[in-house]
Amino acid sequence: MTEIQIRMFQIMPLGDSGVGKTTLLNRYIDDSYIPGTAITMAQLRITNVEIEPGVKVKLQIWDIGGVKRLRKMIPLHIPNTDGFLLVFDLTDRESFANIKNEWIPFLPESSPCVLVGHKSDHKHRCVSREEAEELAKELGVSYVEASSVTGHNVKEAFETLVQQIYREKKKQEPQKQETGDDCVRVSLGVGQLFPLLTLMLFIFLEVYYNV
Image 1 (cartoon, one colour):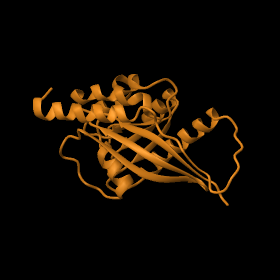
Image 2: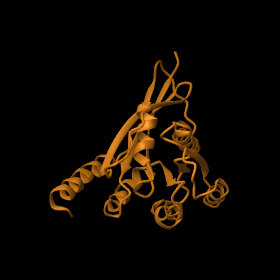
Image 3: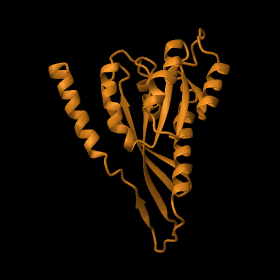
């Protein structure tokens, strides 16, 4: 019988507040568009992806607000994160500049990443495709333009990253031969509980004491 591999990947969208990380996530998981108004504190979303026949991924996506007071939470999650979406707003040059100036310094070297130019449905863009592709080339990452309003390329952005993570992990794994029927393998992040508890504590302090 066919062996089913179940893996667990953790990814995190990074980018300035207001670039649309949460709306991208809502479109990807729920196929819905909910205009963003309130600042996202933090949320964990989980979905399942089949990346090739017989290989499924349980995808954990940490969505942490991009405002500066919440950025102190990001380093807690970096060690357990397998890949990153670097999201900027095509109508906001500052968010584009901040990818290199503010967000790249968070990342471990050689982390799987995809650069996402969001709000591609807008007619009045401030960042050209050529500029974005040049930055992606400089960073050594893929580039995707997407819109959570129309759904254009949202799935491609997330699943391009998932495929990159899968390829990297396969390189790191020794060749194994396993026997038996209906083998199910699950890979769990060892340190995932601590960041979750810390995040809950931080949100409590933020809400009640305005830390």
